[in-house]
Image 1 (tube, rainbow, N blue to C red):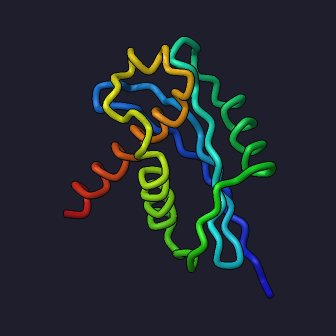
Image 2: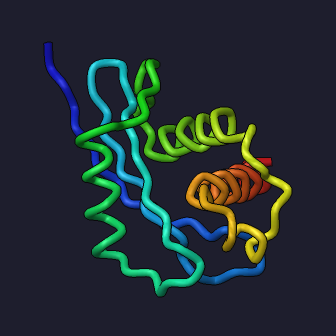
Length: 129
């Protein structure tokens, strides 16, 4: 059985008004599985892309999120699948918080990932409408 490995880095903005990256998404696709992990930057720190990539790939290696599906051939479709998964599995977090409120919220990384995924999906829907 052959496998295919694809690693992608994605830097997502947390809201429509921000212009800075909030994290990194590491992805590996093989054997009808999309594995991914993400890192996010604390709102109090300056984003460091090298550190973000190391953390995301460390999480991908040690404790990835797994989506069991036929792996799409398009990078855009793979990303859409991951973003939908993030929204579905992080939607129970306090997604009505503002970025400022999230600074004091100890699970801000899921909040930032959720907001980034929602933003990505909104943009993708507008582009393909």
